[in-house]
Length: 394
Image 1 (cartoon, rainbow, N blue to C red):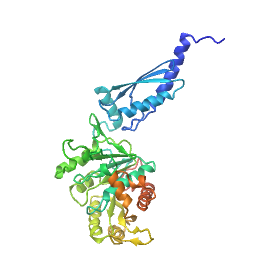
Image 2: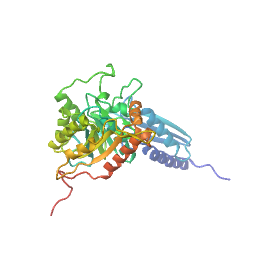
Image 3: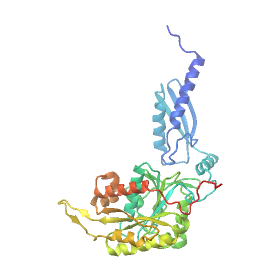
Image 4: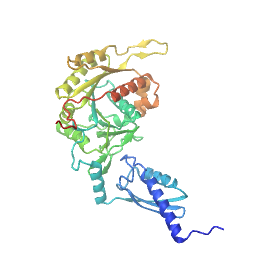
């Protein structure tokens, strides 16, 4: 006959199961901060009595939008521990001091508010620009960001087109009324919403909720510069492989500000095949080069479309992308035509529905062209000009 465990044996078993539960819960990833709860010091206490576990966690703020998901994930993780059949999750909130410690930990070496995307950063910054509006620059940017994330890269996206912001809608980051969510704030840090693996920020997320969705942003130069600067400094993107910036069309205040703040950034120029777009697209590339940025290539959007009978339709003409690439090339730097994205109903429909075509219809010709563009950018090393290397000459 087997004797019942003694009190000390029972306590030892409970402690061992509590350690198992703590390890399982500690591996749960905060959906906004994208880091494990153990690393964020969000687990307050774990206790096990027999087959019942009690887990106390502390969220960053009251009303945390990810609270329900975190609670579900914690409960599910705790249930995977050995011999646990019942889980109680107690949700609390960090104190001011704990939040301050968290923001300091998140910033790492950046104890003060500084821009983390300088020339020595590991993040590759790519500004996507065009000479004029209406060429599908934002659609290309949003889908390119998602395609890069599909390849396992950590991707951030800044919607710098303040007057004509559209990234939230293209990524499905809007409610039924078309309003983007407000970013979660932890003291002076802003956490960007995430869609399809892309961390995105837009001025549309900061507009007063009592304004109509169609409200205009009527700002001049200094406010535009400050907005871009805050996006680069106060938004916590974490460790990124690539940061895409959806630029406003033309060569105005934001283009100059980004050139001043990120002179080391790469630039991708978007145009359509028609001369009216390609001629002005060259100007945006030339302005970028004047600020020290490097034009890495041209994307031709709304190119030839293959019809059901196998014929092609050049609705917007042909050759514009190649012409822009040739005009921006110099004897020292050849600018390639990186992609020609065909005119696509699915690309347009995906943008309207907030479902990027590279996800919703990956076999579409436009989706394949953008996926190939992402692969080409992901496998092309960035230039090292004007960047210091972590070596010391002897």
